Length: 602
Image (cartoon, rainbow, N blue to C red):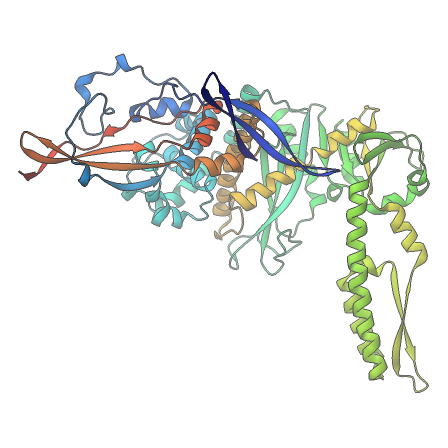
């Protein structure tokens, strides 16, 4: 996504207007479309100062000017500088203590507006700690939102480079790795309360209902052996790190991608075995209402389907590719297909066993067929090239060891499994029984079946909905869960895990879960304001905002002194436009953070 500036001239005056645009893929190629017309940038919006930070973060109006007492000016840590005139030596003006402001400010604004600060303030009773645990929790989640990967990195260099010290009032000397690790332990104890609170906030803010629940499983790997974590094990790795131990994470979210809850499983646990536990957990928390569960084909088993039926739950699930063999004839038919969108068709079909308890939706996509055709062509070319090399090798040097030849052929077939189903090779032997070449041929029947199934997939449901297009739209919402995993891994640093004990790993995943909640909340906030859903674009823009101390050499009563002002840099027009449409204000007025102290006598 990007901002496009438009100029309009009228009566000799020039006006600037802004539009938020995005690039989309169409059948005719990439195109640009306008997401929202942002209008003219409002430069006259009332802005608060540093003393109004709590109100600004919570979305409340800042204090009015007449409510501030002028006698407070100049106090250390006091209100902002307003109508304060000094004689300044411009040659000595300097800037110090530049800090990252925008990204952490946005994270704290989301944290406050979700009410997590208030919730943890009620749940975490104060003790003898010098830094309150809710503040530590906000630091941990804000750091994860800003893609800081480790607590040690937060303590050693990240915290002091941000404006969190000013926003939270916690000195950098008080932030160390021991306090952050202990904060993880304290936060983990509140997991269930946090998940329940988020659900209520989603309802209040976005009107989210729990009619549909998306469930998917991913994995994340460890750096190290993780010998003290019983759940760390080797299994199917989505990260292609089968050399590392891992844990699996099951995530339940709404169709909008808002995370509701999660569970951590052993790294070698099969996805299909997690469904019953997750469904029971959600029913225990929110009741056994007739919700629609949407899952991919990795969750499907007859036992799980029977379990969902016994709970009177509705479901829409994908099915294995092998199930398409029952619908070869239907795929060849040209009638009774519903146009879901350009290049995608769907139809209801009856299962050959005649069981009327379910509906089956057969889908076929032109774009997906082209992709699968290209993938198979690439694999076929690769396998044919490998087999040609083996044939050349055997023709040049006949091999008496048939097992050696078989192993080499097997390695080639294993490297290209899709092509191995339609291409076969027989070994030719000479009169002495040595392998002297290969006879490569295609398996016609398998090739024809693959051709018919290109771009096709099958959905299975017990919903009463009779429109196949609607069922498909419900199922395709599962991409929200997959997108949530991509965000958690790529943007929020879910992988790899550096902790080794089970409680710390659970706490690490909880922090990532809360950061994901902030991220998805930002997307919904943007969508509600007509700004699209590209949170990364907004975060990158806001991250350019810095805070700093401006040092002004001033002259008072013959004395040369320095005046230190803490200010927030004015955002670029594009960034200011986005913030204005979100209703998110930043401190615009500076404040004196040190008393005026004589430096040099003139």
